[in-house]
Length: 304
Image (cartoon, rainbow, N blue to C red; front, side, top):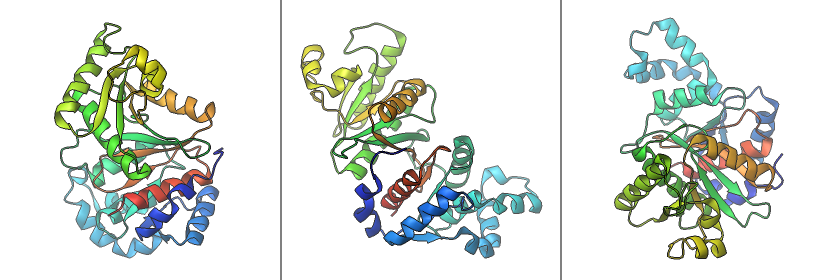
């Protein structure tokens, strides 16, 4: 369970967006309570069933997508009867501004529909994810990426993941991102092909995004502890004060956010999907009511 009311951190900014939010799994008791809380705050929660009369428009819209090639009328009907799919298509048609789902289905189902229906932003290499981590007193804000989607990113994917995570962190925290490319090595302290991959990703990132403060490859302690940074990496621009952490693979990212959450007492919000054309976020099937409320506010905050 979350140990702080993380939703309050986003409330004012998220409300100012006046976003229309879809939270389609409305038979779930957690979702019902989260919707009530959001409505009490003043958010516009769209009942996805109210958009069923637009299914003919939606069929025509997705008929232009490659994944619907050779679909029968029955297949279209079956696809749009699913409230999560209906939410994606209504977002594509601008009938809502953002959405949140995944409390009752796997992340793979959410990600597959998201890519198929919404697609990726131009110049984004891959769909990825991040977790926005809030300390128990909500003063320390960190972003971990990727923790839920890409098992072993290649060099270009690392850059895309890092850039999207940096942008997300700045929007959600109000802080300038300080990006650390993590490894079991700090600046050549170990030799391994996995270290080489992080080094190359860091070099490419600095070339593509010279205005974003970053360093790599770094061990976690030298990225977050200034005293250790002075000993291991005295010339680092981050000076042990990183706030965006790019993990070398899905194993390390997923394990790290759960350790930070369950041992460190941080609130872990996500997985927040990165790189989609429109904001739609996944939920863990183990999510709490506060998780749902907070992630819904994040989606609203990211809406145009």
